[in-house]
Length: 407
Image 1 (cartoon, one colour):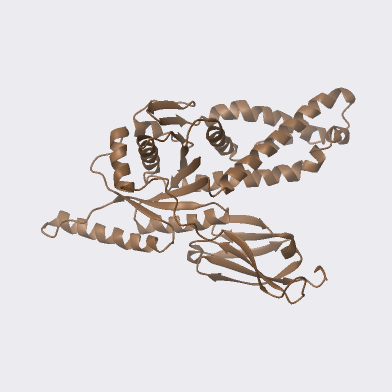
Image 2 (cartoon, one colour; image 1 turned 180 degrees about the vertical axis):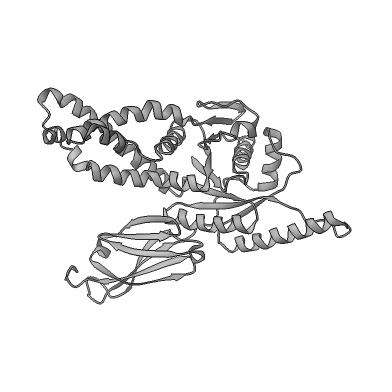
């Protein structure tokens, strides 16, 4: 079962292409669900269908739904907020402060992603196509499971939750309050398990991938390069770029202002496509349609333009791992050992890059995206001596710290 997330700058046609891909898969005999987590909810317009929270079958094998984040917030998160307030109040936190601490930015997006995972695991579908929000919102969405998981672990560590009643004891709650605290701990453990499942789903490159939709314009292409770097920094796999609304070249016999405009526009787009082809990510193109493609028949025509005779879910040639550690000198526990932590960051050469060692983690910042990379055990006993960028690879050099190295 595959999960494919479509995202891109607002207005580039990601919703239409996500719907077209799902329609093509269903027409090919697979059960496909296309689901929108975009608050704009334009998926129904693209499919010319009235969609709700529960999947509906539009034609044989093609299902569609909108994720209702407001309903999820009212139902699921309201209960969790109550449990979090119980813990914070028991720790002596003022009630008003506790209310503020239990409002997590982006929790609606997190709940939407949880619904995608639930649908992927519980439904009969072979492929789940996700119409995500614009790029900036999607980056926040995909980074939330790791960020909130870290927040939860710092606030309520798992080893403390494992000791039933410890939180209640620390808060001075009586025996009568124990059942309520047990319910709170169960809720926290359930949230931690959900976050772990989301992280596992996103990190499974055989199962989950992302497709970046763009129009072949220099400004949009520049944002796409930055997005590629940010997604790689989060450890997420991009299995394709989709260039939408590609203008065909006019015939040589065509003359006049319209012909000059078409030739100039076509030439500009082709130059951008050549640059994108150098990013080592499979590139698909869809021609600019004369009319707006809405409804399943028009979406199937668009899918034919995009995929031709190929399988929309065909796996490309697997690239190198996004993160790897290699030894470049020494052996065993030798103090003259040398290691390199290699992060694959496509497009990183196009913007600022910053590294900071923070305890047992390496803070890597590319543009506006930052990720804390947990260091393997051996590298925790090493010092960072240098870093360099080799093509798409960020190579960070480590040597043993004499005060910590095993001898």
